Image 1 (tube, rainbow, N blue to C red):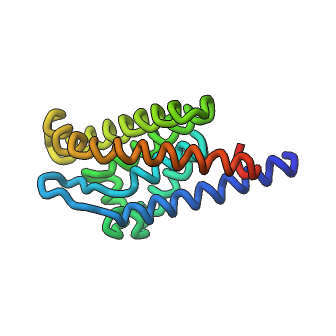
Image 2: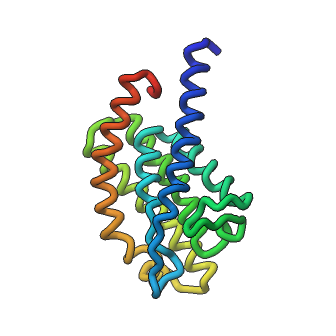
Length: 185
């Protein structure tokens, strides 16, 4: 592997770790909802940024690193929680949705770099984590899909849409600067 490719891979690994850390930090912004086991968190903002900035492969790897760190017990999930029980519990589907959503979001960003494409990719990302999250929530909590959607998806839509437009503008700028600096492709 040529030296330039090794350096680029190293930079991507470092940035993936950084974005996993940003996700852990933003997860601590957590607002419980009295009617749902799923809190509102800042994680989704980090997930949008991760996929848009790092691309599909590295964005998904960053989210997998985040889940791994939490699964082994580090307090990276909301309210400084960690452990496999979170990954396998009612809110674990959202975590797996972060991996899929970040990957899909990143693939769109890799192909099209316009603000509109980034925002549309973020909507796809949101659909992925809400779908997987709702499925696992419904299964674990013994809810039908309609109840799962009402408790695990609908309450989050307005704020997540605001996060999409904010993250879209922010990630577009960050990605361009990292590309111009030669830190990512």
